[in-house]
Image 1 (cartoon, rainbow, N blue to C red):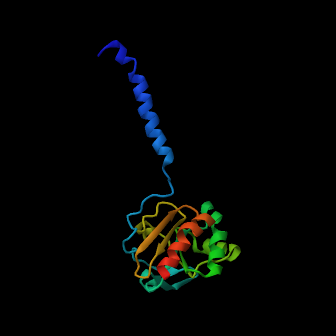
Image 2 (cartoon, one colour):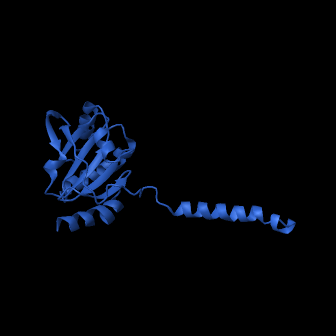
Image 3 (tube, rainbow, N blue to C red):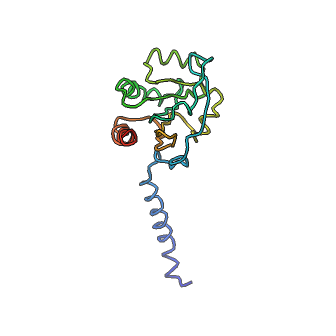
Length: 177
């Protein structure tokens, strides 16, 4: 290789690295594609929070559009999104069901009593298996599931008013229509 071309190797490497990093900055880490979008929601049958003798299954929810929120009382981002969920639960535009992930049920009940309970029902996923079946790797995560039990949307992290109004609510209204 000629000596004059060797001088440009560091510059070429720098430009290539800058391009890769530049593309990385445009990615949205909250928008991780879910393999469940367009596929049946994983089944679950779990005890209801506060009523362990009663169970709730995903099959019981077929026939309606519903939101599934996976949360825990020990989760700081869950606390951040909770006022929005309470407001949306009170607005009653779509039923919200909760899966309480790897939590002490007493702490979860106390948390809902203190902060408000937005859920039509919340179930206990003590070992986290049902949540893992949904591909959850951290709480909170939220899903929109259609009348036939197909996952139509997934949001990782705390919901915001913007996400609810831009993504969740229009999708819910379209699916309900």
